[in-house]
Length: 72
Image (cartoon, rainbow, N blue to C red; front, top):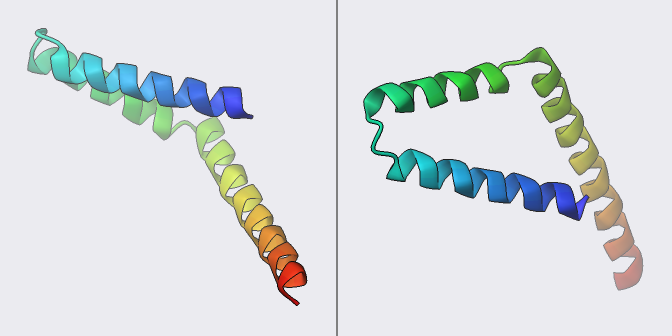
């Protein structure tokens, strides 16, 4: 899981650097923005986002229970 997060972070940094540093102008920025919006709104990505939120809520609840056990 750590490698996936690292890959996502590196990708976001690369995307940001390219977008901010590109001399291609506004047209290229719009193309990139459109592609990112298409990706974000893809039903498979939306499903994965919802699953990630659900899993993180479960993990948070489990961690809170473990902390409460350790404190009492």
